[in-house]
Length: 276
Image 1 (cartoon, rainbow, N blue to C red):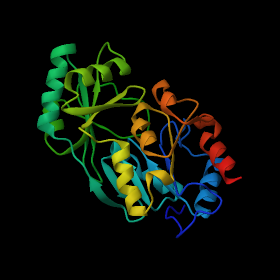
Image 2: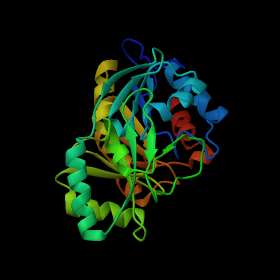
Image 3: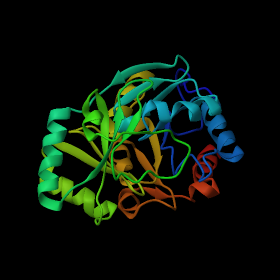
Image 4: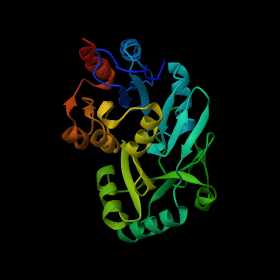
């Protein structure tokens, strides 16, 4: 799958860049991409536009999907922290979390709402996800390393920290972090049971803007697809934001359009219409 835009006009297709989230958007619940969606994306790239994946997953949790797609261009990973060249298997940019600041932020949050369970994503092409005591690991094929000592999670550079609370749901937990420590770190809800602490100011939009600059395209050239609140900055950056039918209500409220679900080829529905 080519992801480099052709010189000049993208022909009849009105955008030069198609940015797609991964889980709940491009991927179906079984982790695959449908034939129809693959064909629509191939038609878009044949028309001269670029397709770029913008995911909350760090590179180690994304590479196998890119390889399966035959994807050889840029991908934005780790909620915007990483710009990765899939064809060269090379990490081009990486933003890490200030661990001292993050620990201070979490201490302030715990003083308000009680103890949190933590997991952490280490930086790098082979960065492991370390899971501390009490953190409930979601079912799926993505590998994690269980650690007994929470201090081990802070021993090396991190892209982000995952948090859980024994009583608060995802939305309430994210609100509590913003209210208590919003000036120290950013917080996003990236999926059911997935609340993440990020470097202040980092978002999918910051990573996507860096990648777009490398591709020679702008926000005005971009259509973006997503399903969760962590896609809101990307929608605000892009010219047109499309929420999946299965999207979180916060994202649907800021979307320019709502398409079919990820199970029903929602990306393909929109791209086929735009291709005419």
